[in-house]
Length: 171
Length: 159
Image (cartoon, rainbow over all chains, first blue to last red; front, side):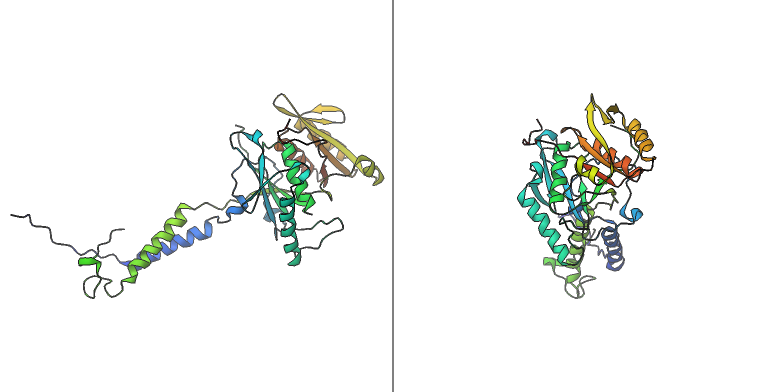
């Protein structure tokens, strides 16, 4: 004799409060989340500088700011060199900041911003809007110099060095 | 989510379930779930990164000593190097630590002169050692700080 299956119970989920809760959760995530992956996408340990402040506290504008990051080619071996990362594009760093494609890309970005009226071009080709440089604290200076020179070649002389101003124990 | 579809074949006919007349509710809930899952998985708190603003001289490097003399500005040269595993700063022909550099710079700048700080470095010196000089300059409100580029830097291997 076949076993009698229990009677199917009707389960009803009230959708209205469920959707309300999910909407609130979504709203929270959208507001507090950081979707600007390109601006701080490369994880790194920044150099310490107790004079560093947020742009808000310093009262400086970030309009039209370009972010250039340095990324180690091999995370385990800093000697392998670094890339410059601009808006998810990677560029090799060349002595004297002479990577034509990176300088070209930065100049293109500068021209776009100048066309929008964000800045005028100075006598030596310099512009007033800033470039943020995110450079790992252990990057050797001969590599850092290449990034700085590249930015200068593109007219980006107003530099914001990303830093860490928190007190932390040295590892 | 606990959800039970009533009836055979996944139908949602009128009278069989709570949303029998609105079958699209299930798809909507599925989409909501997927969107929420995406946000939860890719969620990262906004962190306000701090910055140290710095204005590079046109061209990116500081004017030469002779140009600085023509401009009638005082220059203070700081050479960054590593001794053992410690950063050392060569200023006024003396090798000093960062704390000593800070006090030397404070004394020099308090003379009321307008200074240009020229920062030179050895090629393998880490960025944080040079950033420390920028930080000191920022503390002393010295705006004219520039890097003296390395001479003869043809290779990529740091040698």
